[in-house]
Amino acid sequence: MQRITLIQPDDWHLHLRDGANMASVVSATTRCFARAIVMPNLKPPITTVAEALDYRKRICAALAPECHFNPLMTLYLTDNTSATEIAQIKDNEYIVAVKYYPAGATTHSENGVTDLQKVWSVLETMQTYDIPLLIHGEVTTANVDIFDREKIFIEQVLAPLLENFPDLRVVLEHITTQEAVDYIIGKNNKLAATITVHHLLMNRNEIFRGGIRPHHYCLPVLKREKHRQALLRAATSGNPKFFLGTDSAPHAQFSKETACGCAGMYSAPAALELYAEAFEQNQALDKLEGFASFYGADFYRLPRNTKKVTLEKRTWKMPTYFEFGKQKVIPLRAGAKIYWQQVQN
Ligand code: DOR
Ligand code: ZN
Image 1: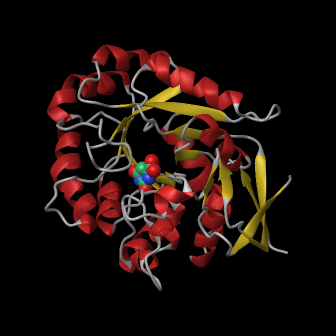
Image 2: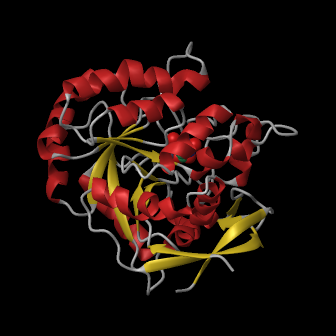
């Protein structure tokens, strides 16, 4: 039996939702991740320190009694965010970053930033206090092809941003293209990127294999095989600028299986196991621990975890659905095989 043991990983990009929905999904993450960076795109979004701390309390209240999961919170940047609000994060151990959604780029991003000029003083404050900016890196211009949105964002928004704020620490979230990989490698270590497991395992054919597959629709959308290969090379390279962020994003079944379905894949129930599968495909299981358990913590200047988790090479079947409040959520690989399984240490 093949086994791998690694220091417990963290998920540096996660959507937990709120209320009963959050309570239904949080254990899928806490079963293996010690910490997670929790996205603020609730409705309404989490825009203040007080809201983030309240949201964190609700998450902690939903944890099993013996669970030591540490949710790390983020604030949602809007055109109206004040520098004073953001300055308060600097001394807060539970709020670690600010999330920038270009308005209209993705799920619940309608309150996002319409023009970076409007948040210039906020960005200056973040640079001064060394607060990381987490970016959904896609332009929203209607005439830009959806498959080019990340590449154009890098050229038109990210590059000028980094020129203006050379000391700002930035994570380009859920990168999907060769261009993003090359750009990250070419910059200094103030710029890093998260990579999801779905972008490592699937290319854009999976949206249309045998029919339209709403559960394979996410943003940024899956890309061509050559981009998947570039992501796999980056994730398995041992370069600490690339680390794990699942972007696990549960939606109720009915809001995915509809004429205009929401973006997001619910990967948490087998996230680490699926990363292991991707790394194994590239004969790079020895690189999984750095990517999953070390580099993100190092970037955020947090201590590495000390407990361990073990995965065994053993085939099991993903359930066809999970409870999601009063609804159902369909996980990635629903009803299909998963080749690794976490076992108790
Ligand atoms: O696919 C996605 N789903 N991409 C995002 O950026 C947001 C997320 C969500 O919140 O559902
Ligand atoms: Zn996300």
